[in-house]
Image (tube, rainbow, N blue to C red):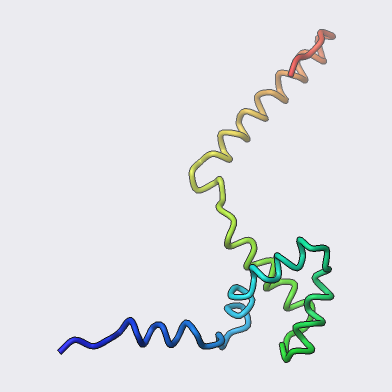
Length: 107
């Protein structure tokens, strides 16, 4: 006897999330589309609040910020950021040496 677990999960996907952070993550593409069209975050919050969202503007702002931050891949996980930082430090050091010696520095 095999149960249809997938059907149960499909039902859960259609339900509105109970937590506010999960709700913001689920509607984030719509929020970003509104932001890209020129709407302010405060205006988006006002519209959502009039539809029943019970969250302060500060909480909404933080939840959107966190949701957007979670979606962006970080360079530090691959070590790429550390390499760029070393390169920048090396270039900066070289520029100061050349500036100190009175020679022209190249980028």
